[in-house]
Amino acid sequence: MATEPDDIAQLVQGIEGMRRLPVQGVQMVQSGERLFFVSTNGRYAFLGPAIDLWHGERLTSLAEADRLMGRIDRARLKLDVRDLGALDLAEGAEEVWVFLDPHCPQCANLLDQLQALSPSQRASYRVRLIPVAVLGKPSLATVVRLNCLAETDPAAALEALLSHVFETLPPATGTCGQGVLQRALVTAQLLGITQVPFLIAPDGRLHGGVPVDLLAWFTGDAR
Image (cartoon, rainbow, N blue to C red; front, side, top):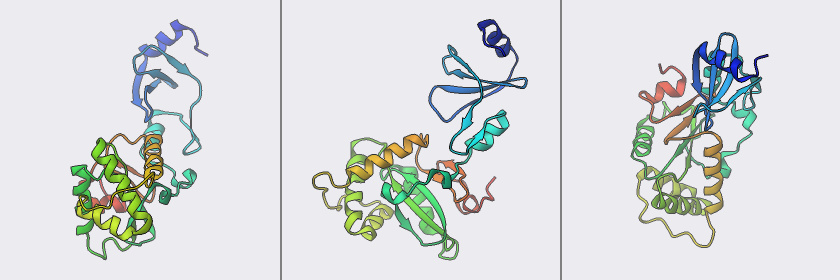
């Protein structure tokens, strides 16, 4: 097994491809049939097997990494998005999770597209909108107030989010809504979410930003 610096140099010379993993500071590299991992500054190399714990599968190739990076196994996560302040749009059996910042223009665009779908188009889906605050203090304040309102009147909180009208939200008192905000932010970080909106399909497919064809993405027909 190649473990010495000179051996690493030989591996690097034979690089056939690399992928930036959804974790800070690490890239996966394939050299022939060998896989190894390199820090983004190129200083450190790590050899040995790697296992994607979210899927319970060993990474054996760049193609396998690509397949697994594009989705998550939601059943293995055992995540209850109610704990993250999710507000539900529609009541279908197929859950779509959407992480969004209330002050994000792209998120507002996505919400408008969701509401533009006909009742029959979204009848199969339950869109679970999870507010996260990534755009500074205004977002933090709005998400806390949304979370606080949702504890007593989730319909009113959902209406405020969908209408993009936050000035009339009741003020949050004490620590109301802050615990939910922190759980949502930590979860977003653990999932490697770096942009909003961020969508997770019923089958675990991931998408950052607004899909070009929203309904096609829901059904898995988007290309």
